[in-house]
Image (cartoon, rainbow, N blue to C red; front, side):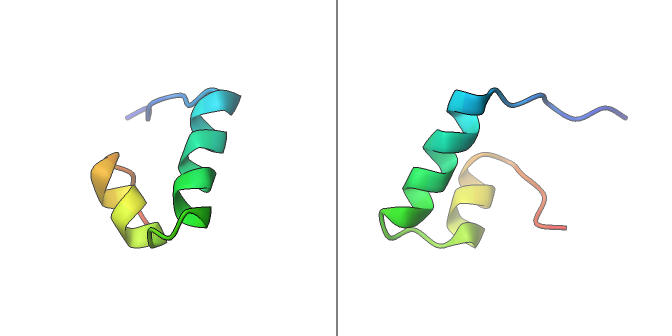
Length: 36
């Protein structure tokens, strides 16, 4: 099963959310991303 393709902008947005104080777990949960 193929996963969703994230654009560079999407990845930057997720990383900025982590830099902004959210945990990696929170960001993954909000965007339905596996932590594995």
